[in-house]
Length: 326
Ligand code: SF4
Ligand code: SF4
Ligand code: FES
Image 1 (tube, helix red, strand yellow):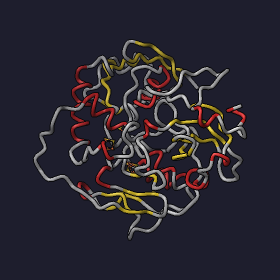
Image 2: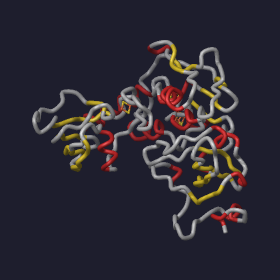
Image 3: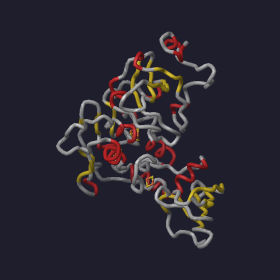
Image 4: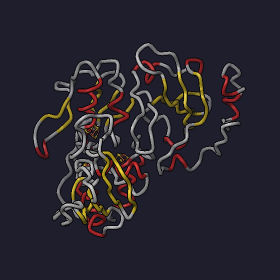
């Protein structure tokens, strides 16, 4: 495939034709626009939240005119010679602050009691772009919490309508049982008549949800996430790769999730058995501490990584059955 040149925040890179501006920025690895709805593993995701807006100051070598409006970088492909401004554009900063304000219009911002706190992209965005206080005077919409099956709880009040969970249910489970009903400000995620979501991969909706709307009932209120220690772990599983992160509290497994990269996306989707039913240390081969690559409170208090000598909590290292600990 032909390569095209694009410059983002003064850094030039060559990418394959058809690459989106967002993915080109991810390739550079710096000044990556935030993405609350795009998820590279989910086909057709993106184009919903507008947090990834960028300014195209030069359209292409052939047509150097700037694009008249800010564009969604997850949905706009690069052209040869394109020049893009993200963090270097005051217009983008202002627009992103506006988008955050809109996202927060109906959001409770109850971070102190929200399980997503500490690993929440909306919380990060709020801190980076939010305004103090709100100009919103109308009543916020609120919903009752709904149990969708034995393991997942939906708290629509926190949902930002990114559609990721719907795409996940559609694309990686064999039976889609939930979606978005109603329109406009009445739109909501629903299983229709509160049916349980029951299939082997349904738990992945928790990992893809960028906020605390879909939560793991086996972990709810057990711990703030920054008090847990993430460990790469694996087990033989006949449904998924069995490669996960187990989040340890002392020598107990508080929760199990997929392995997320620096963009907050899981590397591989995992099955519900691994996620919800394997909470004993003996279920897992612990590989060592997980390096959290994204800018997060969780990267602050963990380990000095030395692959030769993983630093693990003393109590866990007493578990002699585990090769990582001996
Ligand atoms: S979803 Fe994020 S921003 Fe919203 S309450 Fe939870 S932690 Fe706070
Ligand atoms: S429940 Fe979560 S993943 Fe689903 S649309 Fe709402 S915010 Fe997105
Ligand atoms: S990530 Fe591009 S619109 Fe949401």
